[in-house]
Image (cartoon, rainbow, N blue to C red):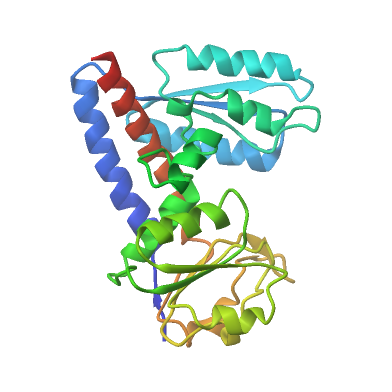
Length: 285
């Protein structure tokens, strides 16, 4: 029977440590600042941004929200990003995705200063991650590694399978597992005999976007199962990409949905903002 990995508890512990460091910086007259740019009126994005703002303020950081209308031009959005790049009171910039169709997400991500890219999506930060250099890492993958470590199990030498190859979760989490000396396989919708591949994993990370896709025949007995999914089941109830009830007896450790990976994402965003701020403060002297 699996032990539940409590993402809320771990997120709270990490946030407390971030808050302590922020208060020490503020005492020296240096307050980290995070700016979030929200384009249009997507309700899910608005809720998510509100949570980010609340947690940023709780951590003692400066929180700035810039709201732009759906019809804002790409040029105006790029100028907003450039203004934030040049604002010394802002150390982290996050443009909430998705953006309206007429705006290139790639252009906007490329425009954010590499040093302030707290989402870890800038091509230079992605490149640094892949060659193993110190860099700002995407928040969800960073949180996943913390969740795995919280089990007390070592990652080194373990067989890890990541189901999903997105640039936001699948690829970066595979790279982070590799840096922890796991043997890593990235599996996906075209993988032949996916359950057989997955069931060899000591660590199974699932990011497919398909509700309850992973059943117990995907899971090696005693494996660590990290469910990145945020879906709705047939009763419109929140669930993950893993069939939690089916897998629970088989797994050694498992993250619930909600309360697993989700709480870690905003916490790692705060940690990234603190890191970015410390780096920039060090440059300013």
